[in-house]
Image 1 (tube, one colour):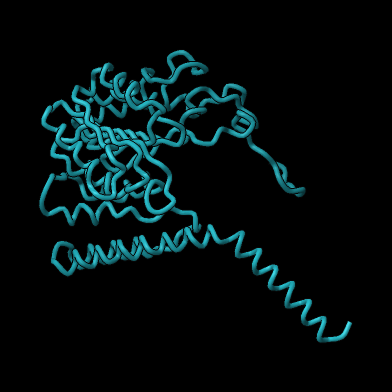
Image 2 (cartoon, one colour):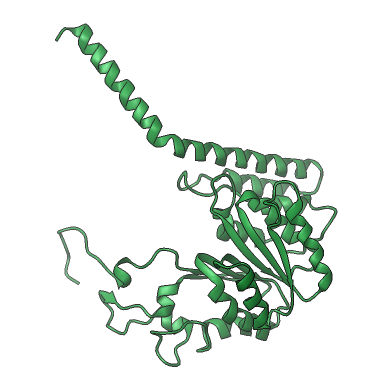
Length: 322
């Protein structure tokens, strides 16, 4: 083969490889562009807040650093911008939040934000002045399938109008009136909005007994991959955390030793220390329990355990004996 036909063949081969690469990686590139656009918007929002004097210089620097932090993978969700929404909310329905909550929201809920985010169905218990409902509605955007607020105040029904605002799926915001300690409220929610929820956020009465009663009911409505999020845990109600994690009273049934707490069940290994454990229901259901200051987050396992068991595997062929 002469040099010219060889060069032509090589060029054609490279063109074919490039076209194939474009076809394979186009979705990844598109997602990256969408993430970059969301980041730019969030940066602009933060800069506007700084220029208006709403954010201090230090707060602006912290938000900028968080937004520009390299993502582990291109599949990581885009920043939701919860804090930016909060700072912008100078008028209208009120929001009352501890400022350190916003980074926890980003960590736990960011997979539902931005173009290509996962669909979200959410229950918010305790909606009061409505501002947080509007925040979830705006920041989850078209990814929000259903948002159900629960409150004892009948006038909170007014916040259903958020579902008619621009950018919302029509009629996707609902309010159910009743006590969080009443199982009938959650039976009604389950019947009206079947299929489970991705987020259950308890910002209700903050009474320890109510927090526990609600967890025992609403955990069952959480679908795989969902997060149960409890706010405003302080010395006055921290007994609820003890009751949820360290009490034998919990909503998990089957395969848990009699009288076992959630903590005991997570670390149970009835077959021995290594190297295959038949999981109990808590190990099957719970992916993690995470404690933030004043917050408890529990994620329901999304991906089933490999082989339906807790297992330790070996790879490699050179070993130093234990």
